[in-house]
Structure formats: structure tokens, C-alpha cells
Amino acid sequence: MAKVNLEVDLNGLKLQNPVTTASGTFGFGPEYYQYVDLNRLGGVMVKGTTLNPKQGNATPRIAETPSGMLNAIGLQNPGVDHFLKKILPEIRDYKFETIVNISGNEVEDYAKLASKLNVEGVGALEINISCPNVKKGGLAFGTQPEMAASVVQAVRVETDLPLITKLSPNVADITEIARAVEEAGTDVISLINTLLGMKIDINSQKPILANKMGGLSGPAIKPVAIRMVYQVAQAVQVPLIGMGGISNADDAIEFFLAGASAISVGTANFVNPEVTMEILDGIEEYLVEKGYRDINDIIGKAIEKKNNIV
Amino acid sequence: MSQRVIKEILSQEEIAPKHFKMVIDAPEIVEGAKPGQFLHLKWVDNIGGDPLLRRPISINDMDKDSGELSIIYRVLGRGTELLSRLSKGDKVDIMGPIGKGFSIPKEARKVVVVGGGMGIAPLYPIVKELLNKDREITLFLGGADEGQLLNLKDYEEMDLELKTSTVDGSHGYKGFVTDLLEEALDGADYIYTCGPEGMMEVVQEKAKKLGVKGEASLEERMGCGTGACLSCVCKIKVGTKDDWEYKKTCTQGPIFPVEEVIFNG
Ligand SMILES: Cc1cc2nc3c(=O)[nH]c(=O)nc-3n(C[C@H](O)[C@H](O)[C@H](O)COP(=O)(O)OP(=O)(O)OC[C@H]3O[C@@H](n4cnc5c(N)ncnc54)[C@H](O)[C@@H]3O)c2cc1C
Ligand SMILES: Cc1cc2nc3c(=O)[nH]c(=O)nc-3n(C[C@H](O)[C@H](O)[C@H](O)COP(=O)(O)O)c2cc1C
Ligand code: FES
Image 1: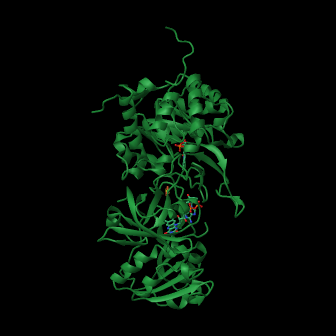
Image 2 (image 1 turned 120 degrees about the horizontal axis):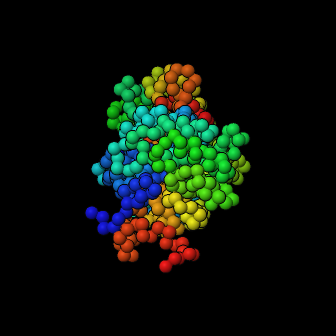
């Protein structure tokens, strides 16, 4: 029996513990069965799912960078119908919450995805608003508060499932987008997605990625992610799921202290496939060592309370 | 079944300029490993996560009795450079064995094996297995120079027909390994190949011309090594027309039917 309470309640989305896996880095879960006791995870954000199957980008799709990596997978996925028919039945009995990360090119795509995914076995939806809006000339939904809000509203009317909106860090003021999606009805905010980056091979004198640009993830982005979680935690009331470079329990705890109620582990799964289990154990050890009985007691601890009434 | 283990290096030596052979004590990995499978390797100390990712390296040899396995690799960038600095007693972090491995169909009585450059490394276990199963082997090894003809001394002791070629003429035929291929393929039942894409493409073309099927071992940049991240995909033909789909080199490969691979895709 656990010595401390690790359960978190994210505005109605209950997780047995705050350790989840980040979309695109953990497949649908079973890919890791040889390394991880999947039943011990709080949640699995599955690979970004679209209405129709997507082949994704040409290779190379990844490049290593100092303490990080770039990826341009291009949302390769089997499509929502395949997910519902073939994949969900295989993962629904695990104890983790299945959180479906959804992506679209138009607002209507998100709405259709939400309506199709309104089924038992899906624990929540995570709206990826980093995708380009084809109708608005490819500008990412996540870079403009009105566009971000319109996606959240469209999804909200289609589903009663807990809604997580995942923010892109490629913006000037992340709190502005956070407020807009809170206003539009999201239950939870997750952050951060990858930072847009690039790497050039000096021998071939060409970009390494076939897509030229890609998303930076891993330890290199952690300070940016911590800063953004800290800022957003003070700008909104909804709970946060923090991610970006989490590689061990110490990193995870930093996110809790910055204001995240749960965390997602992404790139670190590639480096150490067992890392989620080590993080879970490490969080518990930290709480015990510091004399806490409940994970909820450390959430937002690093934020100075300005208007302490009594 | 793949697993992650942290294991001790029994020895490491530079067998040719920039080419290293590392022997590791890893009975758990060796136990279930098959020819053609690979390891996803990491040095133990990468404090601060740099360099971040694991490196895929094929199993070059394994001994089920002693539990020892060896890898042969070339120093290319920072990751392999760091690996090359390790020595006896140091530890490596291994995920493996990964991938499907080669198969040996019953009808493959007379086989041709073609390896070029670092692509020679993964072929040693399958050649050994083919010999165990009494198959007739013609083995082609190609490299820039004699030093690149990995496992040459071992192969010379074996009951097989060995044909070597080097670009500088320091061993065997002077030129490309594929120049010698056609004659041997005539009458062969099956082919195994690993090497630079350009080489394998020629092998594919010649095998197709003579109606010989077989298997190729591919290389792609890898993230997870578990089938989760989709960074390692390669183009594989499906159906009868020009249709293809992306398959994962890590868990659905790295071995694919040679006739189905779309090279330089
Ligand atoms: C299934 C498989 C088996 C392999 N077996 C062997 C082997 O037995 N011996 C051997 O010498 N090499 C082998 N390779 C190639 C080996 O993985 C690369 O040479 C190595 O990753 C280069 O790392 P680096 O740090 O030296 O180079 P860097 O250029 O610094 O690497 C940067 C990034 O690119 C990746 N990368 C660079 N070149 C390659 C490549 N050719 N293939 C895949 N990823 C690459 C690295 O893994 C790393 O993520 C194999 C590759 C695969 C996919
Ligand atoms: C290979 C790869 C694929 C990803 N695919 C998705 C995706 O489909 N949808 C999404 O919202 N985020 C995706 N991400 C972003 C991650 O979920 C995460 O937000 C980001 O990588 C930061 O966390 P990390 O540093 O722990 O990896 C992907 C990241 C990587 C590395
Ligand atoms: S390396 Fe991640 S899917 Fe193959």
C-alpha cells in the first residue's frame, strides 16, 4: 500500500497517479509492455490521431541536438476509425486513463473527432492545437487566442469527456492563449508541445530533417517548459499537466512545484524505457522524505502567494 | 523478448582504423537473440542528457554457452566516439535484442550473402546459422580496403565460397562487390544482404532479374527502438501495384524481403 496519496483529480479527470506519457513518444502504450508495468501509469496520451489515416513525413524524421532532439514525424497515424476498432479494445482494460490526442486541419475536423471518440474506454481528449489551420493559410491554431478558443468550443459541444488543451510554446505570450482556452471551456491545460527548431548537416550543407524544420524536445527545453507552467499556473484556474524534458523524478517535482498537477514524460522514454516507473517511485520517495502525505500538497509550492488572505 | 540491462564490457579493441569490437557479458540478451537482431545502446554516464539518444548496433556474434556477445562498429560521430573510449570493466546500458531477425526458408539450399562496409557486421550470425543448417553459401564481402572486411579471418576458416572485393584493391577483386554478383546468383535460391543503400539497390535489381528472393537489413535513424515514435520508418511495397507503406525499421525490421524494399524513399 502506498504510504502517500498520489491520486490527482484534474477538474473531474481522476488519475491514479500524476505520471502520464506524452503523445507521440509512447505509441498507444503496449509498445512498452516489455519495459513498464503499464497498469502503474496514471495516463497514456496516445499518438496524435486524425480523422483519416496519415502517412507522415519523409525520412529522416529525427535529429539529435545538444541534450535534445528534433522530430518531424508528420502525425503518422492509422486514423480515428482504426483506433476505435482495433486499438482501443486492446488498451481499454489497463488501469491507466486513455487520453486521445487529436489533431486536425480545420475546426470541423476536431469536432468530428470529438464526436467519434465520445465512447467508453476513452478517459479524456487532449486537443493538439499546434497543427496548421489549412483554411487560415497554415497558421497554427495554437498561435492565436481566437483560433485556439474556436477549436476548444467546437470540441466542447461534441463531448462530455474531460478536455485537455495542449499549448504550443511557439508564441509570444503563453498566458494569453491559456486564458482563451480556459474561457472556451477546457477542463485542463497541458504544456508544452515542442519548440520549432532546425539542424543543418555541414557536410551535405542541407537540413538533416526531410521536413527541414522540426520540434525540439528533451532536457534542452525543460527550463522553457518550467517557466511557462509557472506563468500559466498563475494566469488560469484550471489544473495543468506539465511536460518538456522530464527525465527523472527531480525534474517531475520541479514541474509540480511550478504549478503542474500532473506530468507527462516524452523523449525520456527513448533514453530509458523504464523511466516512468523510476519517476513514479522517485516522486513517492521525495514526498516521504519531506514529510508530505499527499502529492497535492506540493503543487504550486514555488509560486509566491501575493494576496495571502489570512 | 527485449529487455533493458546494464552490463559490463569484457573487452574492447580497435580492429581496424576507427573500427572497434566490443565484447559484453549479457547472457539474458544472448539467450533469446536471433541472427539479424540489434541492440539499442547507451553509455551509462550521459549526465545532462548529452548525447541524448541510444545508438542502434547489430549483434556481430554471440555465444549461447558463455553468454557473451560482441558488436563491431565504426566511429562516425559523437555517440560512437564515446562508446569507443570505454574499456574492460566499464558498463553499457543495453536494450535488446530488437527486431525480427533473418529467417531461413526451407527451400534456401543454395544461398548468396552480400555485405558491404559496416553492413558486413550483422551478417556473421546468419552465416554461422546457415552453415549449421548445412546450406551452401557464397559470401561476398566488399569494403574500401582490407580492414573493412570484417570477420575476414573467421570466414576464411569456414566451409563456404568467399569472394572479396576492395575499392583500393588491397584484398580480392578491385572494384565493387556487386560487379561479381550475377554469376553466383544464377542458380541460387535465396539472398541475404546488408550494406550501403546504393549497394543493396544493385543487389535487389540483379536478384530480381534472376528471380531470386531474399532479405535485406536496413538502417534508419531511431528514437525509441520499441515501435512507439515512428522515426525509423522505411518504404515497403504492399500488394501488386506500386503501393507502399511505411514500416518501422526497429520492430517490424530491420530485416525486410529484399524485393519489397523501396530504396532511397
Ligand atoms: C538496425 C541498425 C543496425 C546497425 N548496426 C551497426 C553496426 O553493427 N555497426 C555500426 O558501425 N553501425 C551500425 N549501425 C549504424 C549506427 O547506428 C550509426 O553509425 C550510429 O548511430 C552513429 O552514431 P554517432 O553518434 O557516431 O553519429 P552521429 O552522426 O553523431 O549520430 C547522430 C544521430 O544520428 C543517428 N545516425 C547517424 N548515422 C546513422 C545510421 N547510419 N543509421 C542509423 N542512425 C544513424 C544516430 O543514431 C544519432 O541519433 C546500425 C544502424 C541500425 C539502424
Ligand atoms: C517523436 C515525437 C512525436 C510527437 N508527437 C506528438 C503528437 O502526435 N501530438 C502531440 O500533441 N505532441 C507530440 N509530441 C510532443 C510531445 O508530446 C511533448 O509535448 C514534447 O516532446 C515535450 O516533452 P518531452 O521533452 O518530454 O519530449 C511528440 C514528440 C516527439 C519527440
Ligand atoms: S525507433 Fe521509434 S518506432 Fe522505431
